[in-house]
Amino acid sequence: MSLCMGCMREIGDHIKCPSCGFDNSKKQHSPYLPYGTILHGRYIIGSVIDTNGESSRYISFDKHTGDVVIVCEFLPMGLFARENGEINLSVKFENDDIFRKLMSDFISYFRTIAELKDFSALIKIHNIFQENNTAYVIEENQDLIPFEEYIERSNGHLDWDIARPLFMPVISALEALHRRGLGHYAISPKNMYVTAFGKIKIAGFATANERKRGTPLKSQLYSGCAAPEQYAENFPIDSITEIYGISATLFYALTGNLPANARERLKDSRLLMSTSTVKRLPPHVVTAIANGLQVKRENRITDFDDLRSQLSVSHTAQAIQEEISRTANMNVKKSDINKAQGISNRTVSIIAAIISILVVGTLGVLFVIQNPFAGIFEDNNVEETQSATEAWTGETIPNYVGMSYEDAVKDAEKAGDINVYRDTDESYSDEFAEGVIMEQSPKEGSELTASGDISITVKVSKGLQMRELPKIKNKTVNIAAKALANQGFVVDAEYQYSDMYEEGTVIGYRDYKNGDTLEDGSTVTIIVSKGVEKTEPPATYGEE
Image (cartoon, rainbow, N blue to C red; front, side, top):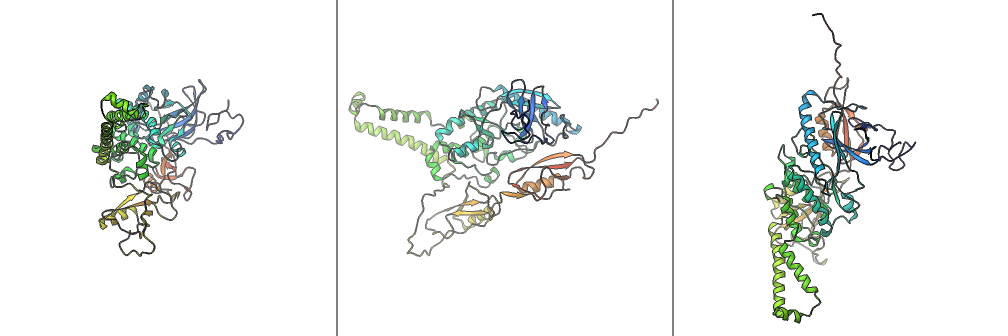
């Protein structure tokens, strides 16, 4: 049986897979396992699906069951070596203790997930074992729709009635994980998928070592969904951290946009949600999301029960609403109802009105008190116009287009009565550099007729979508990585011996060369020298 290493379907004599187009003539580069490697006597390794600072996942085939599965291999970048074609990991003596500790955490983490098999949102774990001086986890493989694609297919956002049954099982699964003392800490649209049965599956599992700064692992955080404390060195992360991530993802599901990066929100914690979005969402849902996305931990929702409660209408209010609805739909004469209850039509109307005011008023007060969105929603449906025959001689809106967002905020602060808000809908631009304002609403020169504070919404450029790879040859790893990060690339390192480059300096790119252009956010692998390979001198034996 000849299998495609890209999809694990049979391909016969074909080199290029007829199903997925994968080129099976190529080899898999180190530090990843070679194509066709057999683990545990049954799992055939295919191409790498994704990788982070702690592990890598491969598409694989289970010879015993005939199923396609996912193999997750413990590969803590920077703490091991594996040459092309090799299977075993080699760990330097000085890294051995931390390597073993991290691997123990990795195994324990996935064993806990395996025990929580009754939660539909969690992946199913089939097997966990150690081999090749590392550890492996065998995960289920399903036909899944990426969550971002699912939202795109749903007109760019979900209504609350659709989102609620999708997200509640996710909250329950995370709650169960935290009760075991563990967490996910990377809940985001990129780590969620939707099954053919309309259920969410969480992906991207890794230990807490991978989800915060200051650990031996290269951290992987998701902008917009990672909480502020995850960017701090060695800051403890917990359920409060997790609630930020799930709230940000729910915000994305309901609006089609992610919140700004947490580090930016430390300077300006306000969120943008259009008035049309607010109008179609229940007030208590908007309030709950806002409370889950508080930048200051002490103001954020602290546990999953509270989050679940705030996302639901209170039992009392719901009961009142159901009773009003039930009464309104009863096919009984009002006079009969009044006689049975001994009250008049006027009394019924007064009671119904009081109940409605109490329900709406209670929710409204909660929304006004707790909602940090207040005063910052943009309404693009209302536009004040001035008669063309009248010449405006009063104050006008200033121009911020072409300024950096930071400079615009400072300029507005000097003015005193202007508030500049950043639109979450950012775009790439060939004209405006990254961080520079492309558009503003109201536009420059618009008549300034309102009294009090003025709100201006600005759209900030993400810069060029295609970025050029800088020169990195002979630079140290840190300098090269910083140069690539500044260009918007994600950096991965591959190490090899060299007698031409000093240890720790960059030999070049794998698969690319400086000057090549790649899309912003692309992962780039650089080749780093391990120095000259040292050989042990032959042993000599003398007479005693």
